[in-house]
Length: 303
Image (cartoon, rainbow, N blue to C red):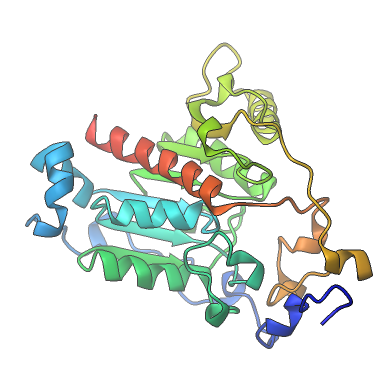
């Protein structure tokens, strides 16, 4: 306990173990199934979809049961996207995130509890999704998206991609790859540093306002030849709320920022490599996620 009466969060962290990261060594990451190899899609509409059928119809639910969506990034936005899609009858889900649960994720990530610290975000979320939608094909992949893993992680070819990646380099690569391969994608920009979920918007990346991450993505994709004369073709979930600079926690006042993430030593996106750590709120990250899931469902059902 420090002089302010707060218990340092690091005391609650699970013990860290050195390991080789899965994307470097895991068998199968570069030997992915093709769509034809996946289990057959269930043809029977279970009664659990009763209320959703009444909204999108039998044909809409059948289309969703046969759809494959890949969610990249399973944090405060991506975890809610995955669960919403599971509750929207998506029959095939690839869930991709390189990271393990950190205690600091508890305020906004569905799979994060004090008791799950140090466990794979992808595996935990897959278990949650299967409990909701037992007939679904759910594929958890603990991997970092980059040039080396791009082809593998986009196999089998998804019908839709949700980009909820934090790393700007990986995010740009994923968006560019989806544009080049004509894979429908919805991208989520900066959900951190905001408190007002009513300012969340959806529009083409070429028309976003305020959001600095969207501005970077737009500029870099323009440089690569996308959207030079109009729309870029990527629906983006963003906020028009101004970014809020982070408050300084009491524990930072005493010794500066101290990362407590499990396996931070071999993380490609460790906290201590970032310029600034923004605050987050679940009611904002979830609002971004619900908007993104809505884009996916409406596009896949044509509604």
